[in-house]
Length: 95
Image 1 (cartoon, rainbow, N blue to C red):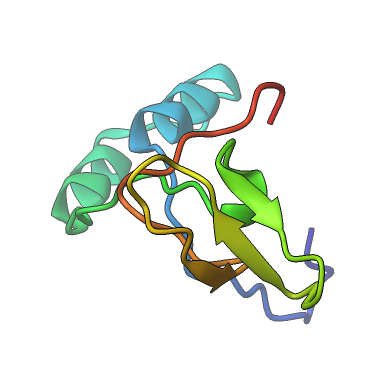
Image 2: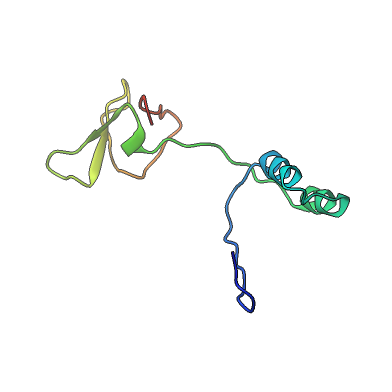
């Protein structure tokens, strides 16, 4: 929480508006103007991604530790960085 005289900054990140509304109602910080403001904010077209390091098909490179190999059938065993992601990624169990 910002102290008096300090500037409060909020970085850009995606949030679920419904969750924010629920929290605001829970803490009694809700009014019609807030709902109108939230409805004016444009939505983003976003999807959850699975990065190679979190994918069940990702195998850490033995000779090049910063590279990961895709072990998904028909992937061609392509090497990527650990933060790469693709449309075929599937999250490892427990992640």
